[in-house]
Image 1 (spheres, rainbow, N blue to C red):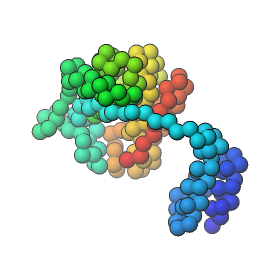
Image 2: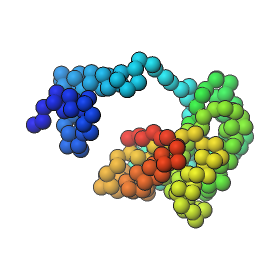
Image 3: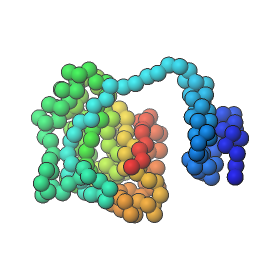
Image 4: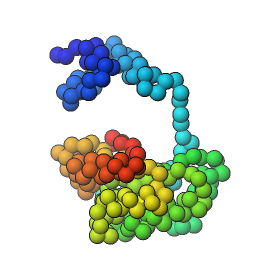
Length: 217
């Protein structure tokens, strides 16, 4: 078994971990965990110093109607289900105004992948938020939503991303990543984009200057 201290020393000196080396660190237990966190803190200090930054973020709920209805999800609904909702402009802007009054710096659009939404819908959402909360950073739209918008408008995902950035999108959500292993995705989220498409869309976003998150569910 590879020695953890050796791996950490190599990583701190610029070595990029292989998949097996990363797996070894993920399987660490006991005192090894503290060594890993200490190395991570050392790397953080070397790269960015002791300055800490943060955003004041608020989730803005758009709709819980979703085409995917993944097995692990307690949020998504069919349009005909009890409790299904889809906010209009008034509802979106009421939430955005409340966030603005709270002096948030970022609004994250929390939404199912509504089967009826198009690229124009996404553009409207960005505009509605900016009208109600000028200057606030908009963090929105997963690779799955980007792929859905591209399918609806008959264009490429890169064209969708370019339009969204042009219309005021600040950063793209790395949601819908869940577990980036197709054999797992086929079980937990079979309707979402496969791993290769998720990665490709995120890289397209990065390529035009849209930074992203990446989330595991």
